[in-house]
Image (cartoon, rainbow, N blue to C red; front, side, top):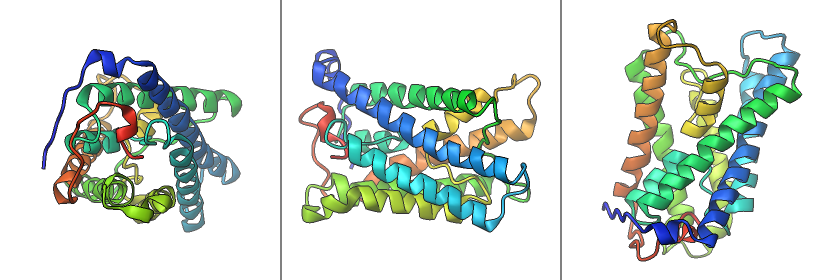
Length: 257
């Protein structure tokens, strides 16, 4: 059930909310830096060769561990979203207000950009891989793939962290969220890159930006496929979750935590 609440500027700009935005920024930065850093490191060791199964497993494991740590360190302050798609799903379910969610998005996207440029600096300007639709995979197939894996991620967040009936299951939420991220990358990595996360893809896209006038049609369609998958998968998860809390407070702690 959709339970959107806009919220108020006073609550969204309170000291507690600003602390939450800072927590999201730091946790997302660490997550993106570690995940993208693993891909850069593997690329350096393999001299840019095609990704093999072992490399995919390594990248998936890095993202799973980084997500687990990021959610763990931020959950008591901001809820530990680290992902605009998760924030969108929780906003639709009334767990966080739209206005506060917007500031979460800003923090998450800025964190990704900073993380990628820091990564490029410390690696001597190494190229950072971007999420693309693989050859042989159509844009429609990529959209459906990203919808499924993004839905799986946000649904896991609802079931283990946001559902008021979760009980002691909430203690394993960071582990469950990290595991589904790793599993989804293993499943989708060879086809769409397995992003599930607009922030995770936005930083590398900015670092590798080419003008839409000179960029290829394929790259534009690839980006559109990812964004459609994220938004659809994130927003649809609320409709299958049970008993979401009403948005009685816009405080960030009413998010994943």
